[in-house]
Length: 178
Length: 193
Image (cartoon, rainbow over all chains, first blue to last red; front, side, top):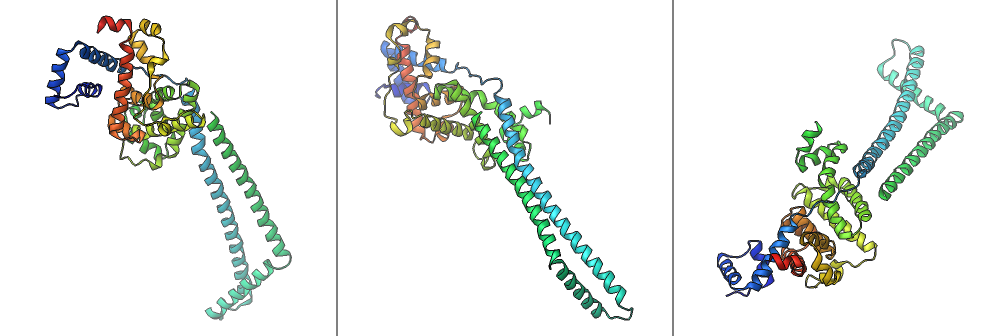
């Protein structure tokens, strides 16, 4: 015979007892008014707990939250676009400079060389021209112009990048305060 | 996809859509869980403002960590774990008593001390039960809300709270017994039981 404790009554309510145990509990409930009273009260609590209703968040809750989420998801995209555009710009600039150098060298070598010149001569002529062009670019005034130009680009990019980081941080901390 | 169609999607389908870049679809998960999670937080934190603030934080955490969701358990279990842990963190920051650290499952609590006997006698049973859930210690009120309101299984509750199944059962039974003892003291109970 099992002892009918509060634990057993709870298990009986949840249908967690074996057939034999259920029989013993039901028999005990039939024979004891006090036990029946306790069990009925427990059942009343159990039934009433199923009627708990949801509390509702404020009307503006979802709107505020979604604003934060949209901000959060757009900030990294903006950063990616910015970095991609800076990289593209620099690449394009390098390509233009390189293309311009090559075309300048080709026109210089083709005007000085005759049709009878061999392929080897034209390649060596091209490389000599390239070296000359690079020497001109990276010496004296050419070097300072290129250096200044890239420094300005780096400074501008750095400024925008720093501002973007600041804005993202501010958005996140605003979000946490909400 | 229309809003109606999105509302009928499962949690996993909505998550996949959000992960594909449709961050606005997260609203369907928010609408699905906001009130249930809020009810749990309100009962644990005993404050509407704190509950709403923590809930906002929980949804942000869920959104930021959605990539780590493994689709092995239910989203609801995963999300309620965030909610439960965030509530404990909030309580900790308020320097309030945290049962997880300070008490064991063996500890007792006395709901009757929350009311005087005359007050209990007069109360309607249903109202008394609903009001008293908030007076239960945090973990107990969380279990009651998850089991009865959110209709979670004992296994899911144990996963969400990081407790063993037997501990969850013990705590659920103890909460019911405490409420039952209160109910037995009401006048109405004398008549109907």
